[in-house]
Image (cartoon, rainbow, N blue to C red; front, side):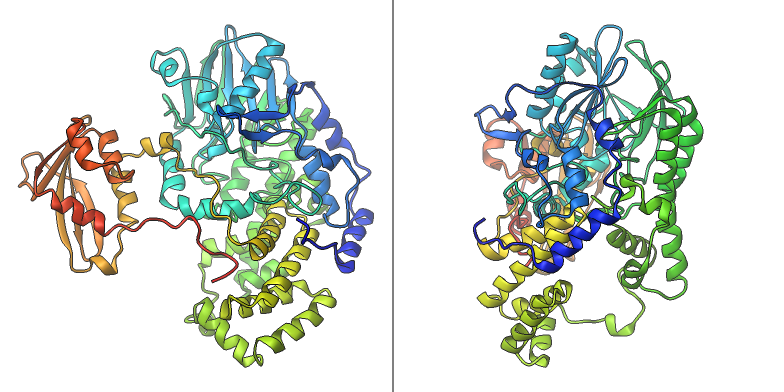
Amino acid sequence: MTDTREADPSISRANDQLRSTLPFGDTADQTAADRGFVAALDSPIIPDADGAAVWDCAEFSFLGDDCPPTANPSLWRQSGLVAKHGLYEVTDRIYQIRGFDLSNMTIVEGDTGVIVIDPLISQETSAAGLALYRRHRGDRPVVAVIYTHSHIDHFGGVKGVTTQEAVDAGDCVVLAPAGMVEHAVAENVYAGTAMGRRSAYMYGAALPRGPRGAIGAGLGQSTSTGTATLIVPTRDISVTGHTETLDGVQIEFQLTPGTEAPAEMNFYFPQMRALCMAENATHTLHNLLTLRGALVRDPHVWSKYLTEAINTFAGRSDVLFASHHWPTWGTDDLTEFLALQRDLYGYLHDQTLRALNQGRTGLEIAEDIELPPTLANAWHTHGYYGSVSHNVKAIYQRYMGWFDGNPAHLWEHPPVESAVRHVEFMGGADAVLEKARKSFDDGDFRWVATVLNYVIFADPDNAAAKALQADTLEQLGYGSENGTWRNFYLMGAYELRHGPIGTPTTAAAPDIAAALTVEQLFDAVALRVNGPAAWDAHIVIDWRITDENRFYRSELRNGVLVHHDIDAAAASAGLTISGTRPALLGIILAGADTQQAVADGLIQIDGDATLFTSLAGYLDSPDTDFAIVTP
């Protein structure tokens, strides 16, 4: 990026100040991150079937250099630790693949085979990880897979370590917390387009890897771009205290719904005295509302489940490992680690509630809140992935919603109309730009970003405003300790300079879409109905799902697609379409050719086929290229 700038002196000074205020002399994490290293890949590139790289283990190797002025030294430190890659021994019979994707893949050795925990995002990266393990530990079969929770970086690579055929034959079992598939499908399909577009910002998809570009996302370096897959679990874990013995390995489970994911679980290996904390306790403050978008998580219940984990498992554990980052060894150290993580989420929750009950708004609380010294001084409580600022706003949103109670904010103009009025009141675009340049020179980048956003939304073709805004967002990125904030700022600068990049990856992979239930399938269709266009439409279609022996009805009325089970003897609609759930999925959601599906015998149509055509005509297609930093 030849158009990037050096760090402004004010940013350089702020970053320098951190070097003297943070405990960089504490190298315990470096020692822990290196402990147990066995081997790395011979070649750092993990390719797909066509030879294209889906992951490069070495693309962040520059993090071994001294931190430059264009990066926050705390984030640089964290990213250097997270970028370490290879096969690591956690303890006897437990190994991890780290640095092959956003998350870790853990391999537990049983009597005859291995148990794989969280097989990454892509089948290519998980297959490479398993191959590296087998090269050094032997060609042991995968007899079980455990998904800790419902996010794609913990199940997407499953077909790189096992097959649907092996699972169907009973050679490999797949365990997950109850509700995992439903939540995974809902997240990746319902709002998947918008989340995917914003994820490009969150993980810096288009940013070059380097001191002025992407240096990591705090939780992991980035996301792989290979083939995402899903095998539906064969066993649900539905209660805390449930135990399993898999290939001679005893496991005790703790369900933690509503924490880092709506369906999540921790578990303990008594034979190894090892505790897996999934993504509930990692070496960062996590997100209560991820910047890509999600349901707001509950820090109150999160802290309580951490207390339960301490009381249930910590005293019996010699090592704690998680789905990200490096382990913590020693009973006392892992107990204190969990206690500080617990206190972190509890403090943010309680203090936000205390302040909002005194009339403070989310913005005000986020600006003023400070962590206690013990929490602030622990590296693993720093906001590398989540941040104190946006987590406090998320807590406010969870309890109070978007409205801060001030009636002046109840009915504000939308962004473009508001921007036009703001710019006019401020004396026009030229006057705003002149003042913004002065604020930029003064290092007041937060304010510059705010006022230039008005100019750009009032006049999207104002090249001078976009250029200065790109420079401004870049400086904010250079100073950010939070990896996802840095990526958002730098991606905003990138798109202002080069135009939108769209959505480079999709979470709605075929395996995920295929896991839709009938209800979720029609919910996904309902979300695409153009309501105003369909106000006067009334279309009733009956659906016979042959592989589930179900009769289902969809009715479009008043711009809403209502759908529900019906009795087989119910009066028929003007059109009945029969087929298996996968076949109906193909024509309803995937856009398969209906006539071809009939010719191939996949579906049967009885009645007025134009009703289906009419319904399809009211469905919008999601926009994977919507604007973010411009209107």
